Image (cartoon, rainbow, N blue to C red; front, side, top):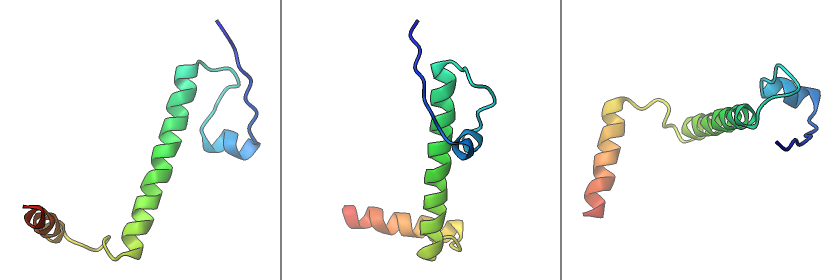
Length: 73
């Protein structure tokens, strides 16, 4: 088995949710993937807010989707 040493700041350590210094790679990858997904979700929410999409109802969203689908036909 091989080992690697990764140095991160205390803030990053806490942000990523590490609770111990030695973890299997699969656990490391899972923690990183979760953090990346959270960041992407925050960006999506921010974009939706800035474009006025966050206040749309499901009916309005479905209407927009249907309109785009109709244009592609």
